[in-house]
Length: 146
Image (cartoon, rainbow, N blue to C red; front, side):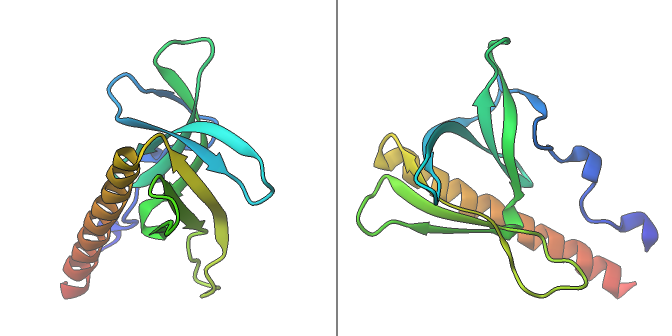
């Protein structure tokens, strides 16, 4: 059983301030509106495990630096009823064994260039996070059956 845990390999996860080769990545440009009113232009990358906000690297073309990362299983995505170009995304801190309270790591409004990019981001976030949750549950099921 110990050979199959943990379900996520920490070495395979992107870390904050990690340089990333974005040449073969699917990037979605967006403006992040923070709770304090500041606006930040970033690229949204949706990995198999994580949502990654990337700032382009000014020194290397095609590279970027991860400025915020969160596990897809820990995000909530809702549309904006007034603007079809916006998503409200909350990334919760991963649950630990000592707490059952979901503390938000980030809660911000993401504004995309148009409603098509917004819907593409929402679809990818919900599709990939659903796949991750179902595959994670499958691993737990196999472990518990032993």
